[in-house]
Length: 129
Image 1 (cartoon, rainbow, N blue to C red):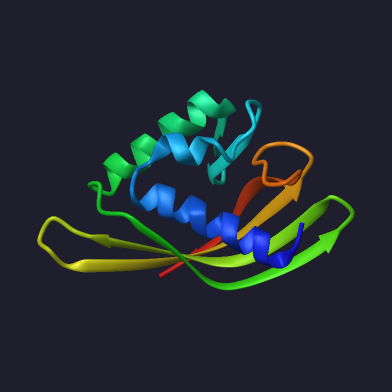
Image 2: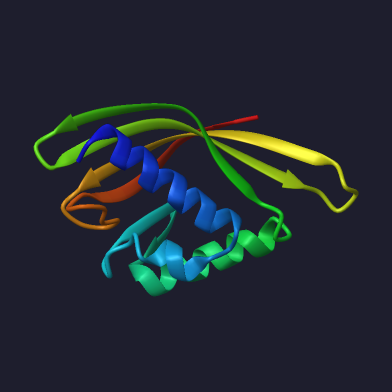
């Protein structure tokens, strides 16, 4: 998979999360995918991953905007390691904005999140504000 295809897929998934188009988002995930929501909290399988994204949208008051900062892609065979800064923007109940930065290490492999033969498993490594 080429760098631009990976970036395009990540942006499409971000847009699906932001617009709460969970049907489109689930198209990226394999039936047996695993999503690491945070260390110690995971969702297994498409149905549970979808429920997790619905709960995340509820938690953020349906005001979550997902963007990417710096992205590095390291590829080998049919696997790609993506080191990226995920930026979450929300609006709180008082109308004030909040921005959080997450450093994530998604790994494209043979299963999980399929894009042209690759798949994504995300491991959240660090959270900063």
